[in-house]
Length: 109
Image 1 (cartoon, rainbow, N blue to C red):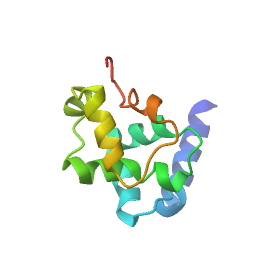
Image 2: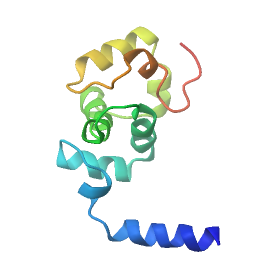
Image 3: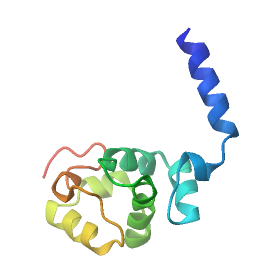
Image 4: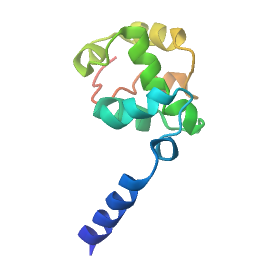
């Protein structure tokens, strides 16, 4: 039963426009989260009461600011470095303190 439901949802999702699945403020941000699993995971971790258009755009903003979205490099950033990064991007998540622990896989301050 679960497999049929999963298959049906995947089939439906593959026919929908990316702008519907991943509304974003920058058109290329939707494709970015769709094609980059880390960007997708990052956006889902940030999704805490902020408009979807902003959340799906933030990983793209971070990519543009850093020039990469490399999980190991981001995980190695200090809390101060992450805080500075969030201050530099044009769009902000709602809960900034929680965001500093946000990168998927982050295990320390």
